[in-house]
Length: 266
Image (tube, rainbow, N blue to C red):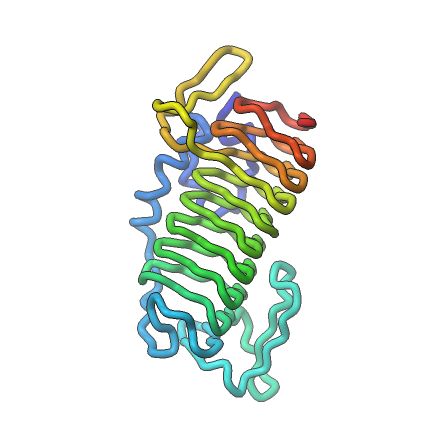
C-alpha cells in the first residue's frame, strides 16, 4: 500500500533506482546520501564560477564550457517550458544553462542540467543535482542533498533540505521542505511548510488504517503523490503522506499519517 508505485509514476525518471517496490516509499530518503555521493558530477574549474562567493557576473554553461554572458543574448522566457534561450551572434546555444550574477554555488558536487536558470540571490550547497529546464528562483536556499528533477521550480525564498522533486514538481513561493518527496506535477501553494521533526524524541511513525509503521527516521517531512496540491499557508505534520491527486486546502494543517489518493484535507 505504501510502496513507490502507490504514489508515483517513475517511468522515465532517471533517478528511479532510488526507489524499491519491495520497500516503503520513504526508503528512498535513506538511500539519498549514498546515491548522491556516488553520482558523477561535472568537473568545474573556472574563475568565472567562484566557489562559495556571489557570482560577480552572469555566466552561461554550454556543452561543458563556462562562458561569460557578456556579448551573449539571453531571452528569459518560461524555463520549465524550454523558453530560456541563449544565442551568440544570432546563433542559438541549445541547452544553455544560465547562472545569474549574485547566485552562490558552494562546493564541487553540483550538477546542473540543460536549460536551467539559477537566479540572483539563490544559494546552492553541495551536493545538489538539478534536472533539465528547471528554475531556481531568487532567494532559493538548497541546503544540500537536494535532488531536483526536470521542469521543476524551486521558488523565491523556498528552502529545501535532503529532499527529492520528481519531474514537473513546483514549490514556487516561500516554502520549506525537509526530508520530503514531491511526486510528478505536484504544486505547492505559497507558504507551504513541511515540518520534519517532532517535539518528542524517537522515530517518526506513520499512521495507517492497519496501525502505526515505524519509519526508522528521526527526521521525516512529507511525501506527496503525483499531481497532489497544497493551498497557501498550509502545513504538514512530520510523517504526512498524501496520495496522488490529494489536496491540502489553504490555511490547513494536515494530520500525520497516510491520506489516500484524491483525499481533500480541510
